Length: 99
Image 1 (cartoon, rainbow, N blue to C red):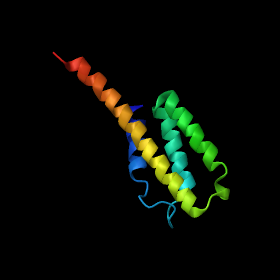
Image 2: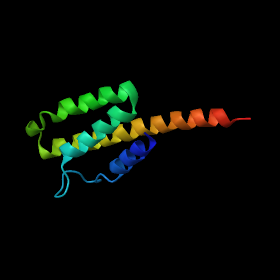
Image 3: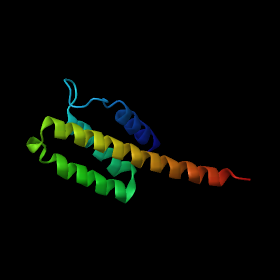
């Protein structure tokens, strides 16, 4: 599980800063984020992943600007979820090693 988490974090980090360009598919990138949220961030992450999936299910109706904005929001939300997860993991770890 830890290796999968690290692999997913790396995948998230290498997603492009400027989305929906020549080599990037915003919808696929949002799917990567949703998959990671679902796997590694509990019930709240799964709910957010479902929300992302619902939004992109109708991505043909989005303008490119709207899709870029959705991508940027999805990435910020995903990073926030990851930060909370890491804080909880580190908090639990440090609580165990206190003298």
